[in-house]
Length: 331
Image 1: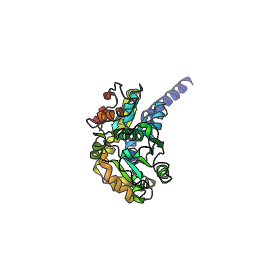
Image 2 (image 1 turned 90 degrees about the horizontal axis):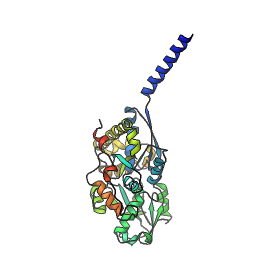
Image 3 (image 1 turned 45 degrees about the vertical axis):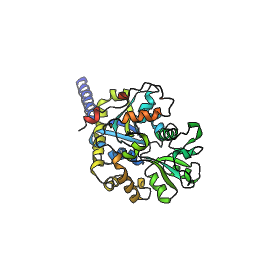
Image 4 (image 1 turned 60 degrees about the horizontal axis):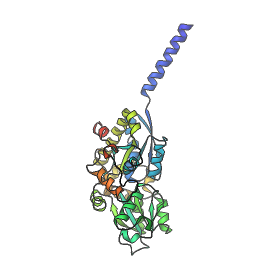
């Protein structure tokens, strides 16, 4: 009896061990609005099956504002965030070490739109005294808005940042005059331009336009994680890097139409042609290999230092805000 029980116990343990060995690595990633084209690699990697190919079970959660996604990661609710790299710099100033492990883009893909109810607004300086839409307070859209206003000679106290999200909520805020201008991404940009309700004031959808507005290449969308989690889960991080580098190569070698066909239909918001055109015009913002663009972190630090009391006077070690180790080792 004892022998049979021992054999059964051994068989169960062996089966459990074998099952565990083949179980997919479970990772939860919060995306700061996964219908936004700037964060397209997250949903595309899932759609192409690249996570599964790496033995990963990735759950993508949606959060309208990057700052809220960042807070969920710091609380341990999610393991990673698809959001802007600038949070890695901002958080280090607060004593929290977070790093970009795959750099998706080298330009923000953002635009400052102004309502056509205000034809006299010709520059950021003209927005003094106005309500400016951002996805969330403390978000990257808020960072960029504050920098552009201060650069134009407007004090932070002389305008109001209003958190309005993106998509329908941003559009409604502009239609109802709750905001007179705002920072947003595709496909929201194209929707407001198409109806003639807004026009572009500052364009940061390409590397060239970004250099003109911000003084250099501005690494934006990325997969970032806490340094502590990366160190404890290196094999899983490598698998994520493998999947995302493959995805970036797919974006680099396929047409906007091919890419759009892999995305959920509701992302088109009833206008597939507009979605494809916006993607064709903007997909050069994505890196081809996930590597941090040279000089990019320095631009981000300069931008944040331009307005943020949190950053000014702090010693920031940029080498700890990103790593290229995993993307360079990607298959």
